[in-house]
Image 1 (cartoon, rainbow, N blue to C red):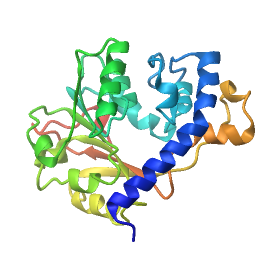
Image 2: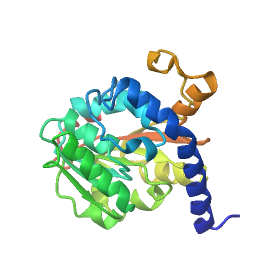
Image 3: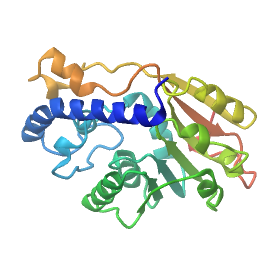
Image 4: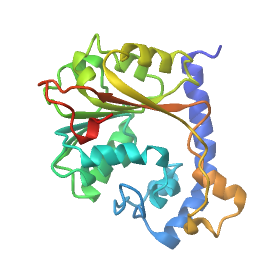
Length: 263
């Protein structure tokens, strides 16, 4: 078994190699099509120059196909009535800023332990004119979540295995009343999804989507690439991996859940 510190070093090395391969492809895509997201729930969001050699998934995000298996769930959130969106593991802010643009007046709290990611997220918020509604911070713990007073809350968790610690309703009871999308990193810890399912068994409806590698069909912006580079540009996640949507049955005040939390 590789110790956690060793796994992180391996992951960083893989990410660096991937970015080195993607850099020239990203450059050419941006030269052809610019830095605006072209489709999907965050269409119209503008990226800032310089991301070409930072984000390995830049083309998928700009094409509006990144993690598109989740788009129906985000559609529920956008149609809902949330006061607060919490994004744990926000990276450069694709979801934090995208949701701030898509949900009028919602407050967004974006967390990431990486300082560069926090700087990029803040810059992306400024680029899209939502900096007054996107607060960026470092570590988010169960105690951080327990202190949240807002009732209508949507929580997005993509924190590389930390979700098993973070999503603990015994430490943060208000989690039972929130709408939650969580990326479950069973490839890092095979007990993650089972643990989350058991913790929330009596509280929300749980819908699970298994990750399926994306296709390049219907993305004409990629026609100039070879088939191998198309697959590289659309590469997203290791296998096995899944997402879960946790929908609350009741809100804190006893009112039936709104459109964002319907079964």
